[in-house]
Amino acid sequence: MKADNQKIVMVTAYDYTMARLVDRAEVDMVLVGDSLGMVVQGHEDTLPVTLDEMIYHTRAVARGRERAFLLGDLPFGSYQV
Image 1 (cartoon, rainbow, N blue to C red):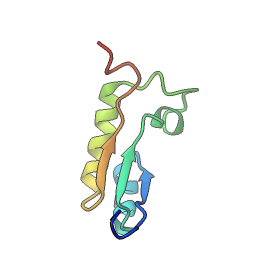
Image 2: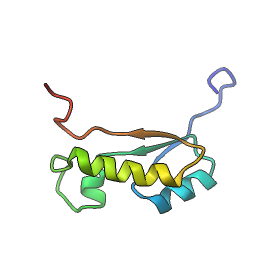
Image 3: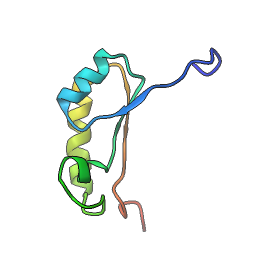
């Protein structure tokens, strides 16, 4: 893609239905972001999002997409030792 000077298209999805639409649109990458805490769950910020919630939504998106590369966020603090 880069060698051909093609742009990469990436969108955010949080569920199966959106992932199906993303795949139909031939989007290159789909992101399951921890922003779902605000967009889906109605929180003020992303801090309350848990790893289990991210796994749940990422699995739902994975079932809905066939073509697009899947990228899932790790929630805040889950990678600190």
